[in-house]
Length: 76
Image 1: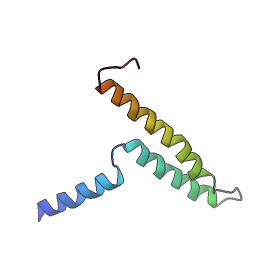
Image 2 (image 1 turned 45 degrees about the horizontal axis):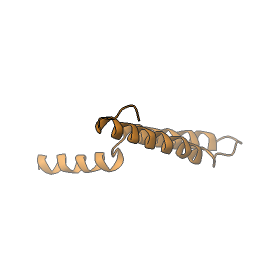
Image 3 (image 1 turned 180 degrees about the horizontal axis):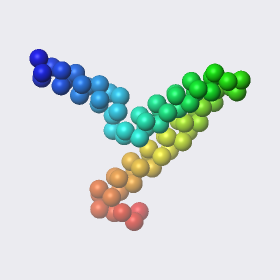
Image 4 (image 1 turned 60 degrees about the vertical axis):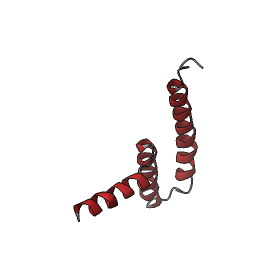
């Protein structure tokens, strides 16, 4: 039973967090800010697209930088 619970938890961790925990935290923060702003008179539709526009290039940059370092060419 314990092995099944560990496997279940590992699946959800990998599914939700994935390769980069910072993206998961950014998405959760964007949704929390959207929920908070939606209770005001300020439109909140733009918060998640802005978060994606910031998180996606940061993740791609971080991934390509890690790939270059791993290949032994950190200056490129």
